[in-house]
Image 1 (cartoon, rainbow over the protein chains, first blue to last red):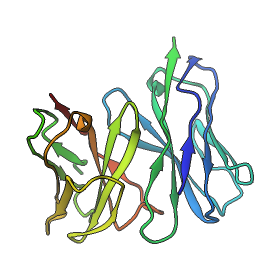
Image 2 (tube, rainbow over the protein chains, first blue to last red):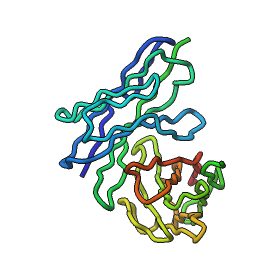
Image 3 (cartoon, each protein chain N blue to C red):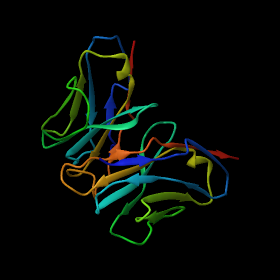
Length: 115
Length: 115
């Protein structure tokens, strides 16, 4: 079974600053995908960024980037130039590539952005 | 293109009753997944449907069931409601089966309160 751990329940960042959200996972799978999802107060969950485990290069999407350490089973999300609209709950998620696999989420972290 | 829609948005039921939630995926999407979100357990996978067939199931009791229609719309049913079933129920759709390589688009959720 896979587990995803987000040990920090809450974080705060000053507007325009950089913040890193941590995530670790445990699995015996060798091939899988990792995701960060954002859930704003309106509750519509959206995908922020995706990382394929077989790719060594860290994924980047505009101000969002990840630090993927496969050996350490670590997958952190860095948000640069934080904006007020980044305030939300962020979930780390794991999905093996095998058939009949399911998406496993961490407990989430609430990010607040100070103006 | 319209997003994933879920109805109703809010529901209040009493213990022992049953409830049916509905999800309409994005047009052209054939896979629908359901998740339960609670403050204590976070996001947990319920089941996934593709082409009217349940393809994957999470660790929930048999009181939780679902189905998918030929137009890809999906319903989930919870019978004999318990207080612990109070949660936000999220539906997500994707083009094809599974999430690997295919982004899951989430609906706004149905907030179920069991009294």
